[in-house]
Length: 277
Image (cartoon, rainbow, N blue to C red; front, side):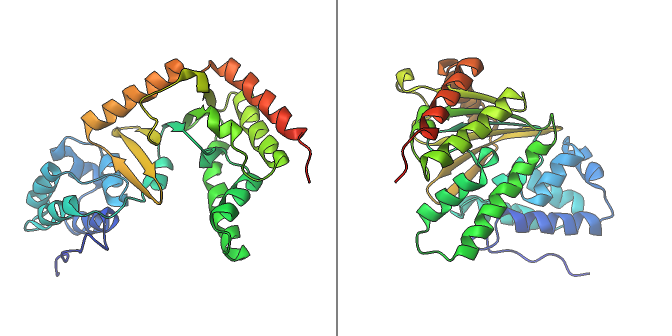
């Protein structure tokens, strides 16, 4: 049976490497747990590599080539992928299997907490000439992500909203009122933990962008950093630990959950009473 072909990392990033890993593993007759055992990782970790939600490190690539007799395929492609500038778009796939999600949002309400009206206003403002059906598809995809919160306990969602998220109007006053009341409802029902980082907190370690930390059962945590039109997953332990510290420092500077809920309710009430043209 022919072996896997080398891939172009510029057009086929870690998802394609993961697909080839699954092919080679199944061709060798091994389960995910059986492949993970000599690597001292769990079967779920191998599953994340195959799904493309986790980056294949060189040390694992070398061992996998030996175990699966893939003649250096994964080592070569792992080295090539490390040189690629291809932006990473697998955060949502990782988010879907996370046991806990902690996020700092500097400007926008995070996707998992958005209402339909808020998402509609946000996408329309960012794509003023786009067709309505395209906007509708984007909104539907955004709302589909929120079904992660249908489970009453998992994943744990802890969100820190910068006060700018509350004060920047997306859409109209009623849209903002509805969006903030939605967050308040989830927080009041103890489904999510929400804190507000007030303007009075001053400078902090995350002023340059958003931060999302994801924890998993049986696998190391990930950090996701997002910029304009791009995003990057980080799984280097030292890097993730640094971002974990950043989040905890933000939480220390933020208002308590009860104080945050009171502020969110107050701002929502202000939006609800705004005069509309």
